[in-house]
Amino acid sequence: MAISVNELATHKILQDRVVLVTGGSRGIGAEIAKELAAQGATVAINYVSNADRAQEVVREIESYNAKVTAVQGDVANPEAMKKVYEEVMETYGKIDILINNAGITRDAKFVNMTEEQWNQVITTNMNSIFHLTKLVLPNMIEQNYGRIVNISSIIGQAGGFGQTNYSAAKAGMIGFTKSLALEVARYNITVNCVCPGYTFTDMVAAVPEKVQEKIIAKIPLGRFGTPKEVAKAVRFLVVDGDYITGQSINVNGGMYM
Ligand code: NDP
Image (cartoon, rainbow, N blue to C red; front, side, top):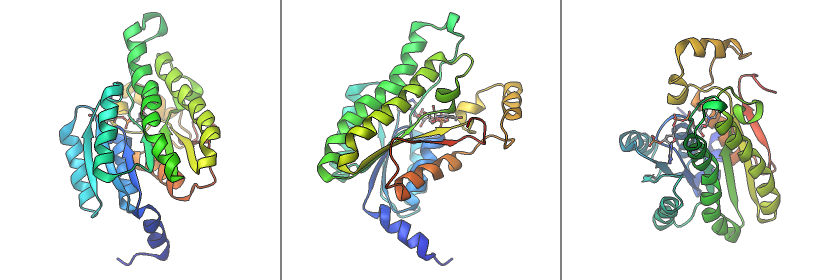
């Protein structure tokens, strides 16, 4: 099939770009990695434990003739993140685009929530973006270019029953995004959030079917989102969003406005 003029132009935009996607072995992160690789980007996908799934994503991206590598490392561990950063820098020499996507849930009603559940979610979902962004930013500043996209959540905007930890972390990401955007705009670095609604990945598949039905009943578009639909919003920010910074794009089927 012939490539349209638009596709060619987009391809060029990411051709020389290196992307690091945390949590790129499954779900939304894997789709973001594929979406950006399909536009010509070189991609490093980080994962924590699922080497097989990470290799599946690598193989698929290789089939687009894009450069790709999988890098193991726990985003909750600053030392591990330093190693991930160094490995990507050694392999590709730079990171132009950082997608802070890795995240977990540890749901419990607040009265039952343990300090461990609180800390796991805050450390993995929010402290991680402090550590990784701090590593990646100096090189972006030096090259006067950078795109950072943080994957927050509708739960950070609207709250979620049994999710005080997750909601706090995801709302924190939005505040972080707005403040950092102010600080780094002068270096041609944009920082934005994408806030997915309920998106069908392993995270949502783990929710009991009865609860899934109740959630769908509350979504104006009447279905869960797909990882691809979230990835397209990320692609828009990275490819066409040069004048967009400090924003949150909601990809939620109309569930929160
Ligand atoms: P999944 O559970 O499907 O995938 C999680 C990904 O994150 C995997 O690649 C996993 O790696 C990786 N990961 C988990 N913990 C760590 C860690 N400590 N260090 C490094 N990588 C880690 O999640 P989703 O795709 O559903 O979610 C992606 C992001 O989107 C998350 O931040 C989530 O909070 C957010 N989100 C998701 C929504 C949804 O409905 N699905 C809605 C709103 C936001 P491995 O395979 O090795 O375990």
